[in-house]
Image (cartoon, rainbow, N blue to C red):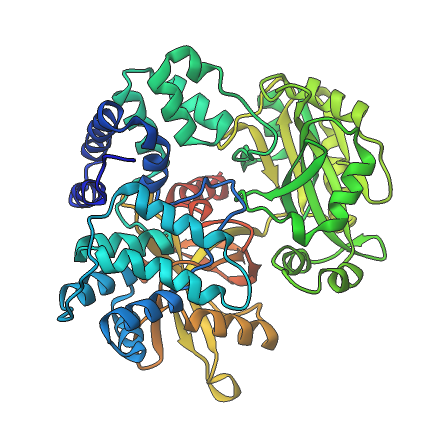
Length: 558
């Protein structure tokens, strides 16, 4: 049984949250990991998860299935507080963790079954909720939560709630954890960082680091564990990009959902770019892939698009498919899908570190194309024949696709990295992925809906979201209604027609130009903003940033 009390972890949470210094956060975590190694090494994996505010690895398809409403119900049952009172507090405070702490602190009822919580007890109870299904599942989950809250101190209760909601709010990013693991086990940060990129499992990296440097170096890409996708920068122009790379794979950029498809032990799983398992929502993609590739262990990457009469249709249709949990077969008939593959990262063995040219050649050899699975349309270009890239761009746009990609033919795959080895080039009207942080109710027949949204970008330096633009156009009545219903649950404050939201929902907004503006916190705004649609396929860690905005301004001014 674990020796580490949950209070000990909570004290670490508090120390981290009480400093804004990234180096101090690193040192606190490093010291804690060293202590765990000496006193309780078997919980190292769980500690790395809990420091990320998770109880399952990010690539796992397991989830607790505990809603905020169930937390409120458990606190109401335990403390005798009305659910409406707790809901009203949440609308004002916005942090269910703080509300939990306050309620437990002010609790006047005597608890006779209070026992000190351990790290193992907390994570074990929360994990048990994942396997509970059936008609009485909510009450069974309620009992596991109540058991924790009954024994928790107010501060412990705060972090139990934050862990359940996966909003830890201590300001620790993956980079800080990588640095802390390297420091704790006296290892080169680049070795830890590379192992994490290839395994996407900080817990496994930490365990290996306890053993030896060689054990860490042995970590690699494994089918079944999705890795973060390699990311693209903006292209300054077709000719400029080809001149810089010299030897380039230029391929069509499709307007769909980027997927990483894993096949192992005779089964196939599909993950989005935010590592969400969407296999059950896309059964025909599983069928298509298993028909098109050999029954060997592999990881391939591609784009799934929605089609009509075998032609691409709006990105929003594929989102309807990916988010669907019921009536899958009905939606399968309504919104047909097609897969375009463009990379292979594993085939019998890891090959992500081989040059793209070799990987693409292998992809050509192992895929049997069909009406449902094709390889991405591509050309190999150099500065001498860059005109072929321009022709591919024109063809791609005319065919209803989004633009083109430039990829250095000599480059390895770099999980989670955004660099100059991969660039994207789209028509002049650019887009940004912004998080909704505020809104305004409409007028007239739209008075019940949020008619305009305040959109923000992520500031990497401060960790805050900074306002950029109000956007209202681009939404039909159906989107207005569904988005309003969704946003009402995220309201933090209200002031007449104005509201602020908990940052959670991401919109893709198109614009014609970036202009200076004193009205918004970024110091800029967008001319002629139009909402293209929801970006439920990406997470908050992939919202566009202030530095991305600066990059786009530079491209605009050149």
